[in-house]
Image 1 (cartoon, rainbow, N blue to C red):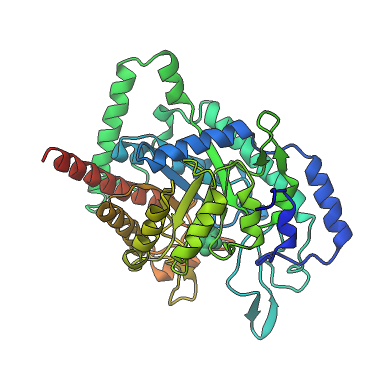
Image 2 (cartoon, rainbow, N blue to C red; image 1 turned 30 degrees about the horizontal axis):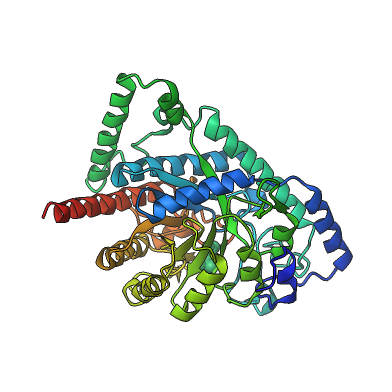
Length: 456
Ligand code: PEP
Ligand code: CO
């Protein structure tokens, strides 16, 4: 393999990227971004890598979540705070279930570029280029809005920097104090179906009260007041990624400075394509989406390229097959991993294989399908003796109506009420927390099963 350079991807086949028409405007933006500070530092990316390594060994559990697409017009402190808060609540529930630390990674501060299933979109007979995320073009359905504009990269950088700044403030400024964060009753105050969530909430609350009463001091108190929170996004718009790529002065290695973790999407994982080429050279932990069309052969090549040193925590495989399809797909990929002796962290994305069109015409995801895929993911790992290392959700802390179902049932008819996503449907705050409870239940069951096996 030739020596990696951050611009080598340019000579390889690329998909899902815009063809900018104004080359000088593009060059000017790239030159400007190249001079801006990176958003993250190498030490942070390494630290996340070591935590993902722990998740791969079953000594931690990853929670990755956030918008499908961050949008310029939905950018607000409250939206960031609410998603951050729900993720902390979910993490608390999952910690209780898994009895291991939860590694919190937002799909935030950079999740702007979107791959699309079709290059164009037709509405009322008018055909226009697809919307590709706010970093590329506009959602409005006009010919002008859909022209890719490189200047939008600068606005994305600014929004990412401000988002990360607020996340860092929340993480260390007292907002993340475990004693403050939880309002465990969130949405689950009434109803028989919610009783089991209330029960678990009470047990968590008891544990927290005990810790408080026992008077935790010093370093331990610090851990309860601050939280580590990382950012991630799909590394799709490679001009942006390259412009933020920086050489780490201590190791000489290259850092994707756009976020702590980047991932490669299901549509851009061609082993000889531009996206894999870029990702293979950075020191950050890298995610790889694995779908029904991922072959064992491709996976082997991809693992060798993306993690040549077989470093733990470097590569996270994000399985997204769809409910009912995990049992036929995951075992063959687990086998490929085992045949290579590859070190990977397995994470379940139960969103992208479960998108349907509702009767009312909205793109949605039934809560039950999301849950079913998570359960199938756990069951296959149990059967194979491998480790389910985490979950990956499209979610928001806002009270949207984009996915159907949940204990506070969203119906097909409700979808039009508060359907705000710029791309795929997200779990709302209540659905996200409910899912965390149900995943925690799975984790408890696994621990109990493992303990029973160990005790003969
Ligand atoms: C996404 O995560 O928003 C996405 C497009 O996923 P995938 O590449 O798995 O379809
Ligand atoms: Co999505």
